Length: 68
Image 1 (tube, rainbow, N blue to C red):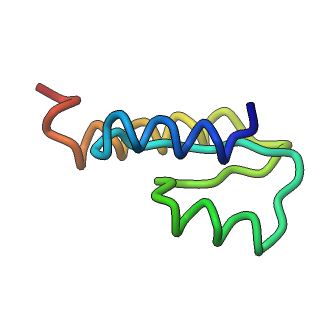
Image 2 (cartoon, rainbow, N blue to C red):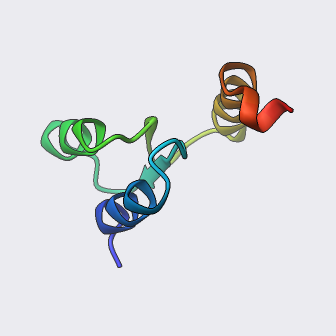
């Protein structure tokens, strides 16, 4: 399953679930397509762990359902 198909599946089941895609093949067209389909963020490989942790922190901050 591709990341894009996974994004579609997750959003169909739970539209409020935020999805962060990580890819080794990031082109502007792929990024825009994922963003339009509802991706929260798109990370290109290689990436820094701090980048992922910061994104997860922002999800906790902006989504009361996650932070409780």
